[in-house]
Length: 164
Picture 1 (cartoon, rainbow, N blue to C red):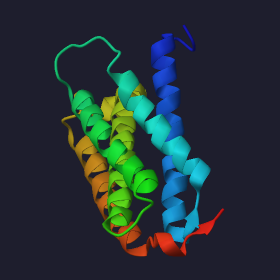
Picture 2: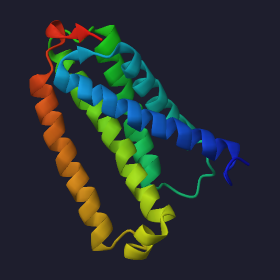
Picture 3: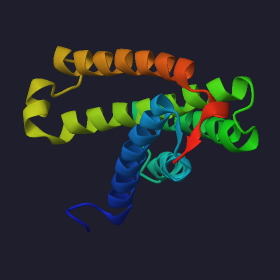
Picture 4: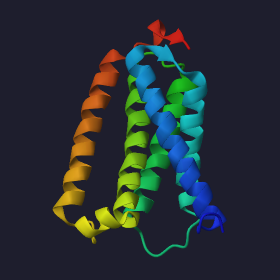
């Protein structure tokens, strides 16, 4: 046990947090037109690993976390292929931005859900996660990610990126 968590849970949480942090750095790179190759690799690898490790937990029926993990395991390989296999050429540039942002959003959605589960003040506001505070928070984050993804897809021009 590490900090009261099993080794699997601890590794999953650490991977998730690294994926989210590095994902926000990568998002920043999209807006500042800087290639952040190392950050991108960390983001894509830890996000994929987060999704994979999520399936090592005991199965108790198909949950939203499982569905998000499956979606992530579809979009992350597309982002990897667009970035490395197709070198962001043509429509792959936009495919990379969209799939990378979807992967980040899914991680953030689950983070918010976990915060509403684990933080007593938030759990009191939405004990079943069907209450307005949870729904409004998730809706605001979704709208923000949609707007950021649209802006990033318009701003990101791979051929103009500078190395950083």
